[in-house]
Length: 68
Image (cartoon, rainbow, N blue to C red; front, top):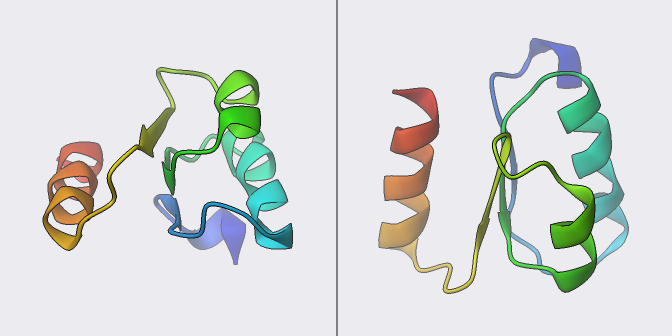
């Protein structure tokens, strides 16, 4: 499923599924996720956008920016 996706979106700020983000980045997928201090150090700034205040409006704007 990861290889068929255009972007990886992870709205949770914690949890086991967060470990999929480095895998998505290694597969060349841009990442949109809730801010996490640990993952912030692991993800490439040009390929990942971490939202500090993930409101629905902010998610929509960020996603449009990644796919535009």
